View 1 (cartoon, rainbow, N blue to C red):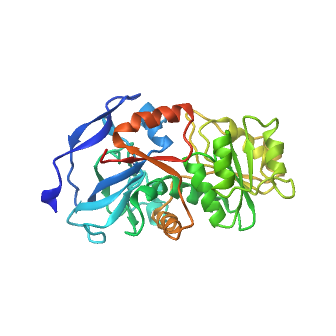
View 2 (view 1 turned 120 degrees about the vertical axis):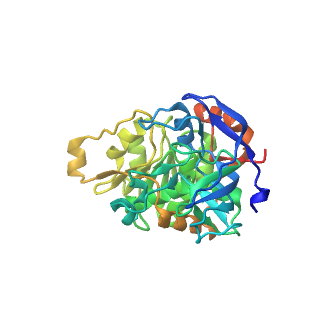
View 3 (view 1 turned 45 degrees about the vertical axis):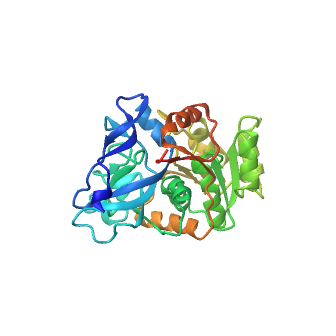
Amino acid sequence: MASQIPTEQWAQVIEKTGGPVQYKKIPVQKPGPDEVLVNIKYSGVCHTDLHAVNGDWPLPTKLPLVGGHEGAGVVVAKGQLVDDIQIGDHAGVKWLNGSCLACDFCQQADEPLCSKALLSGYTVDGSFQQYAIAKAAHVARIPKDVPLDAIAPVLCAGITVYKGLKEAGARPGQSVAIVGAGGGLGSLAQQYAKAMGLRVIAIDTGDEKKKMCLEQLGAESFVDFATSKNVVKDVQAATADGLGPHAVLLVAVNEKPFQQAAEYVRPRGSVVCIGLPAGAYLKAPVFESVIKMISIKGSYVGNRKDSAEAIDFYRRGLIKAPFKVVGLSELQMVYDKMHRGEIAGRYVLDTSK
């Protein structure tokens, strides 16, 4: 098998913070003792990838950097210590590329909080290349009956929102407002929420996103934040008793929605922050937060168990991630659309183009 692996590959590389991305040939790396080499067939494009290009998070990126962390492909080589995944198996390169597996967090299934975590497409090279390296313990195991292009967005967006919904604590029959519902994360969050028995209030803007949320993704109501005269009252009115949703899942890329959520969530409700707008702060009225006894928390990416569960939801036909396939060479076009807020669903890159 090793003789079939090329020495060079196509990749999208940023040489300096702020970009641009450069589509060029780079060497194919060899896996270390506890690593696998995955021939990436498809890679989803996440808003985090744009943050990595711009360097607008308080976390330094590797430079030069190959971005991407939603890579689905086939294992083509592995290190000598790897025995629980085989060459030819389908695998996913996720945001969490590796962790120490020995610290308190790793031992308690909170490996995303490991201080030595490796982050695909941020601190180590990611999936915007034809062959990517990852720690064998952390690659997602993808059943071979699952299409690799369709599962790619689940590897970050799906796992992340599934974890957030678990953190929200809402029970079947209760309501959840999803802010940024028409984007890559939100479109998956609506489906996971519905599959978990929750009633969805979609919050976003634009007729295309409204139609997608109500007709394709299972939302019961849609609030357009750009045309609404009072978002707080409209979200509360969308619930059966008018008290507001039991939980709010924030996957927005702007700060303002994070300030509003505590106002419209119902008493004893939970606000779960997932999106990471650059330089944003949380702000909530102390009096209302106390007397309503609301919870405000952050939710990061899922652990290995969350990942397996999120993939299984898809395998069972409960999740259909809306996506459009374009060539790896077209990544800059995708970023330009992100800048303009024109993406409904997810773009997936075909690494052969």
